Length: 282
Ligand SMILES: C[S@@+](CC[C@H](N)C(=O)[O-])C[C@H]1O[C@@H](n2cnc3c(N)ncnc32)[C@H](O)[C@@H]1O
Image (tube, rainbow, N blue to C red; front, side):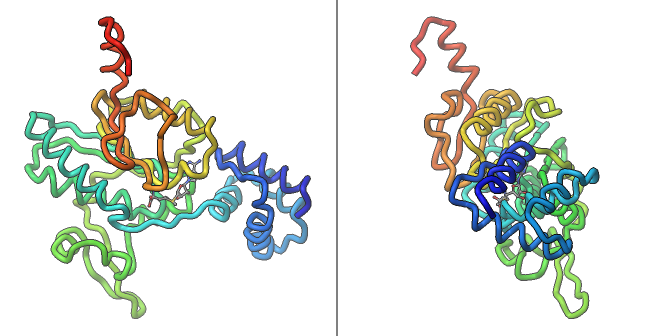
């Protein structure tokens, strides 16, 4: 791929998804696009780019973004976050809270939002709660997998056997051992397509917790800053933001205070309040 074509791809992908491809990624982009071109019987990169631009269904755009970013995920990935979430939910419940709103902002094929749902069910077993998890992703392809909610047996291995029995139905299809999520988890979830680079989001807060893990690595500072401003708008004061372990908000936004590695609390309002009272902002 020549430099000019690469920069056209880069510009297009950034515009459509916020994904920032640094210079030097030419060979990665060429290889990934070549795979799609073979599937579509297209000979040149330029032709492929025109094809994606002209595709009113948006389906090829999804394929293109999927080819550039990864959908890698797993049940209980970076599992400390789910422990933190479980403790928070129990604490808030004990404090009298009964309405809980969680957003999983890059849900991929569903392992993360379903792990969130298990955590909610386990922490809030009392039954008198109004809990919802919004799970979004830019890729309609992975969102379809979320909706199906059926996983190969080995994908569900990180789920403890007792939880597997409680929340999955085992079945066998064409010699494959599969686990299907039970309605008790599905009932908590709402799946929607949402592009994290298109702010403001069509949602109102307040949310208790946002999981936005392993997607900000693809964004540049501008897109990240817009995203964090939206998270701040949507999170309740004292609400939590979990990011991937390889991601850090250091130097990004003072309204999020680090609680532990990759866990942040929204202290924006408290800080403003302190400032209004004439106290020093840290
Ligand atoms: C590596 S996966 C992370 C999945 C999960 N959060 C985890 O940590 O296991 C990244 C996901 O981000 C999604 N993604 C990439 N760009 C996006 C965007 N602009 N808006 C929303 N989702 C996006 C991809 O489709 C992919 O499913």
